[in-house]
Image 1 (cartoon, one colour):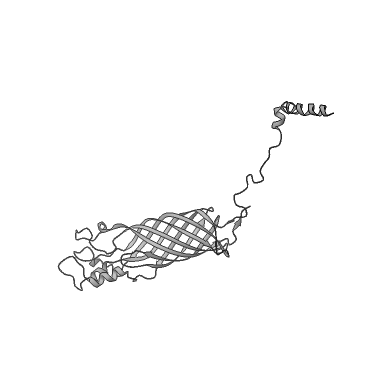
Image 2 (cartoon, rainbow, N blue to C red):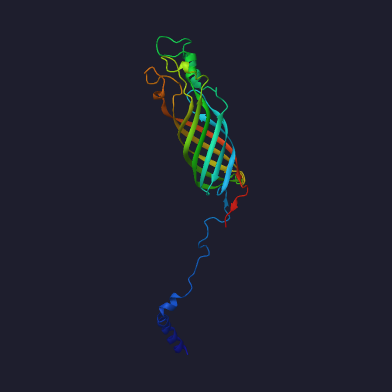
Length: 266
């Protein structure tokens, strides 16, 4: 009996090798239960196919003569979870908020204009402009999103986004009377609408599914002559005296997402 069992075991490998290859190929393939599964289950899609709207407060950074603290709003249409079309608008509520450079300059300028090209204090102020309103339309890209915790007790979703588009700045001045323009030695304040590219980065911190707190850093590149002076020395104040410059801004917004209930993925 033992001898027969030994002979049977020795013949087993040859029997398996003799099985048709087609029969082996038809054996069911083992499939992982995670195949085709999403990377994150039950994920709150906080941006996809939602509107975002809310108020904002924006301030300029590094202006020559006048700071601008602006009140406005933001509107976004989130086409997907990472692409949005956005717009913003803001009105300056501090048109006479002089910078420290402006104050220092006025302390050093003479009360009356002399024989050189140095302007008087009143003439210098007359030529300065300030931001009246800003507007922008842009495309937002949000490649990074996630969740963070504070001290293991407070949890919140966030996203980082970058944007680019067209910016608009409307400049105003205390006096833009033409009699002060295009005359030797006098100032001609630059006013009106200036267009230029805008770009920057921002972050959302979600306070639940429907409300977010946003922080945004923006730059708008436009041609301007903030002092309204004859920069080329041709004794005429015109467009040739304008230069391309940065308008840096920092904005804080509180926005509502609609619909208020975020879609939950599988």
